[in-house]
Amino acid sequence: MRKGQWRLILSLLNKMRNLDKIFNPKSVAIVGATSREKSVGLGLVKNILLGQDQRKIFFVNPNQPEILGIKTFAKITDINLEVDLAVVAVPAKIVPEIINDCCTKKVGGIIVISAGFGETGKEGSDAQVGIVEKVRDAGIPMIGPNCLGVVNVKESLNASFAPGMPKEGNVSFISQSGAVLDVIIDGAENLGISSAISFGNEADVTLVDLLEWAEKDEDTKVISLYVEAIKDGREFMKVAKRIISGGKPIVAIKAGKFESASNAVKSHTGSMAGDYQIYKATFKQVGVVEAESIEDLIDISRALSWQPRCKNSFAIITNGGGYGVMASDCCKNLGVNLAKLSKETVDRISNSQFMSSVWSKGNPIDVVGDASPERYGSATEAALSQKNIAGLMIIQTPQIMTDSLGNAMAIVEAKKQFPEKPIVCFFLGRGMSGKAIEFLEEHKIPNYPGLKNGIIAVKSLIKQ
Image (tube, rainbow, N blue to C red):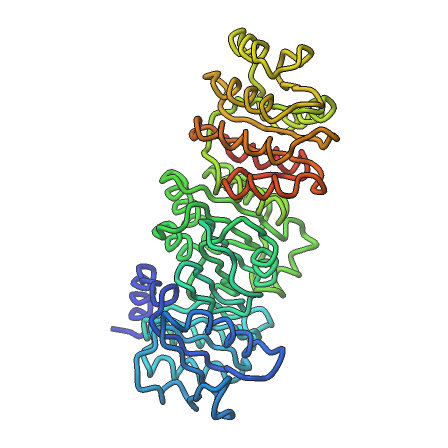
């Protein structure tokens, strides 16, 4: 059998590889570990030590006998125990030699943090082809090069130089850019993340491979993507459609939309940006929710992670008439439908002992500026009781008599009666509402500081 044919067979087999040794390793070696301050190597060391109670950890550096009191090894082949995952952070010119050692050691998986490959030109591209041939001949999956690394929160694995370990949740972020993933990990607040994966140049393990891993991952409910280019569009469509049909939504932001950004994309990860209109049509065809910004990506991910999806029929409750009008306009612009209140619902709200006689009698449901928690609670229960109201947006503006925490508690209690209907809140003004917002989000009711970004998130909840 010719070498080229053998490589083709290995390449096909690689598509069925198990990535567990990367995402749930029992042992990790950091090649390029160092104690040098403000270095990638030290960042990797500190992050991997967060999970030292769950796995064996080895540091490889021929120039330092120990790092943070832990003995080092000159080469990965000097380690006399099995190594599931090797994380490589050394200068690009040394990477081929390290990959040789990893193949000799028969590690379970490799993450190459090092840059200086396909994104830099012909010489770097040739070097990248060389290391890919080696790992595929050895049957070892490799993420990277030119990536941030990976984080698997439930397994206490931080094999990256990201800024710490995010709060555990059920959203998997998969990003072509390490810097974007840094921002998400650092700024996603209370969202909760199951995994964060930077795939860089996508030389071996592909975006589709990572999607298939997230599809099987029991801790992942929502998959969120930052992509600059998709190498195998047909395979992406097939896998994404299957994942979405199976109940896991995919949210994506496509960067490099315009011709002026193409060179930036190529110099960043060595990929061609492609025609944005093709991406837009592809996302729409398979049901991927497209985000326009990282803020939208996080906002939409929070809504999908915390609330059920529903039909396109909503109600708005507000204690500020002007905000009700603006929310209604925004819903109209974004294609979010507002239901007409039934006579039964109007009567139920009107007959509540807590309701003002001058409430709006329509949708938006304006419960007036002096609304109490009881008034919010009765309006919420009445609206959710109407069968053709599939979900609810609740706005609170801060008045001197407003009991923000009481309102939040009333909303949470009403939500317990209707767990199948989503609620999204807009408690505006953190000065008065900070504790109330914390309470809502502790109970997985998302709050948004602005109408447009929140209603964009609401739109993502609509079943197509």
